[in-house]
Image (cartoon, rainbow, N blue to C red; front, side, top):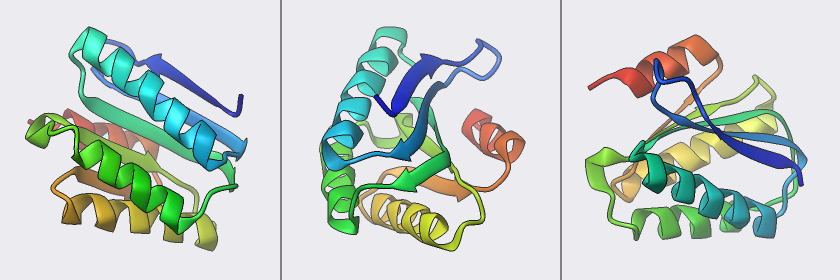
Length: 125
């Protein structure tokens, strides 16, 4: 498994997904199933998606399909996702695509290169 999901400290009230290496579409979808199970159980709908160690493995089509699935959950303004990404051009491009596709579907998402800034954005009311 090239991903883990965990609850962050109560101070941050968020669920974190940490990816590393190559993550294909099946793993991407499985990680979101586990994320939403944890989010639902804790009623914590803010997600920090750490892509810092991700190297690829999925397509823009895979990302779009997952964005569609997330938006179809109907969580509205309760759900917010911060993407933590390095300055690597290809990964930053994918994170920006996720951000744009999410926002276009009514899901609050934003890409960051700094963890503290991402957590601060998630903590906003």
